[in-house]
Amino acid sequence: MRALISALFVMTLCLGIPITDVAGASEKGEIIYSGQYPDKCLQNIVQKNLHGVEKGYALKLTPDQWHAPIFKLFCDARNRKDFTPYSTIEFYFRSPSSNSGNPTFELRTWDKTSLKVPIVKYISGGIIDNTFRKVTIPLAQLVSKEWDLGNVESLAWNADGEGRVYYVDKIILRQTQPPSLITEGQWRPFPESNTVIRLTFSKGFQEKTAKDLNNYSISSSNDPLYSVPAHPVDAGFTHRVHSFTPSGVAQKRFSVYIRLANPLQNNSTYSVSVKGLSDEFGNIMSPNEFVLDYTDRQILNPNIKVNQEGYLPEGPKIGYVGGYLGDMGGGTWAVGDKGSSLYWDGRTTPKKVVVPVKSALRAVSGLRDDDIFAVGDEGVILHWNGSAWRRIDSPTSNDLMGICFGPTGTGWAVGSGGTILRYKSGGWLEKPSPTKDTLRSVWAGPQDTAWAVGDHGKILKWDGRQWTVEPSSTELNLRSINGSHKNMLWTVGDNGIVLFRDSNQW
Image (cartoon, rainbow, N blue to C red; front, top):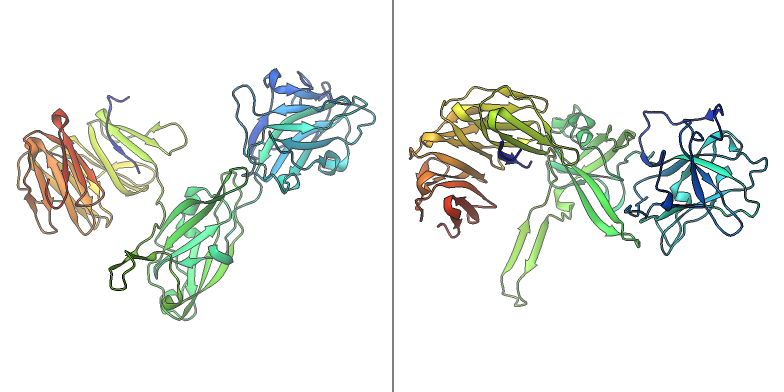
């Protein structure tokens, strides 16, 4: 695989017993038990085939007066389980005993025990008999003052002096509560600027629903630009840890930043509606609408920070303006020989994506997950629109070796014979180059700045009007360039050469 990749861009007791209320196949959750489990992780529990909900394996609980049935999660190379992202625990339960007693359920970890709940209170139909019935226990009923259910080690049922037998199957954790918009307190909707509004949600959401601009609209009765409800023009999102629970579980804030086409006006009132965001379990939020009164002089914006250096009244003071407005989403792309193209979403296995060319692709970069470009031999330029690659017109037939997009949306591509292409306003145009040496990499920065490197130690700079040659201390071929700003650029090349740009020189 590595040889092909040339560029990477990181963006039941017996048969016949009836079953009541079996979970549908479309329901999502995390399965804890649905079949065989290591016997050494079961205490006062044995597994019986042909006794399950679907006539497979089930857990036979065999409590006695002193010993409770224990299902161990932290066992046999398995880890403790954080239950805090979920809202319910479900399992199927039955008892062949004529008198089922009053069985209970609880969770345990090494130094804590959850609250204990009676199963009959949460079982379908409210009775325990020889029919498998679903038990749905809200995890909030198990949380204690001492324990939030982070790092669960085991599931436990009650001891029983009469030695009654119970069967359990299909233990599943579920999240049934959809995301909701926080509209009060510190995390209520907040204007980060006159064109960006931060929205914070009670829990995580699917990125694709957060990026769907149709899920947001804004209108106003006293701002003519929003007399008709309008959707934002972009959306970014971020997940931030803000605290930890006593059991060490990270508590996160999940925010979306929507960017507006027109700035908010002082002393104007806006109605913002949000809908359609769903979590990973498919729970969709209820539509929500809130009112935002905008006056920039009354906003205490956390993106404006002031530092004092030293304690002298006449000493220098430094102010900082800026803030993180979220990730635009997307994943990682790799391209290579014979039109190879791979995509990774950061979670599942990387997958091949069909490309309309068979020539080598040399580099890939883009603006967002539905606006990616790849370049390669014979001037090939491909565009990814979020669903497919398509070939677009190229102003050159020379091999293209590098591509990069800057933060303002301007893109550059470079290649053999000193070829330089510029992307702006939706099209690629060739620009005059001061060299015939092959250029292999390009870096695009803010304020329409760019650098390119290539063979024979060639380093070029774009000053906003033209490309010029910068002094270089090597004749070796330079292969790649990257950095955080114009005075912190690195370029590397043949024979381990490394050059660093600082104070306007390499």
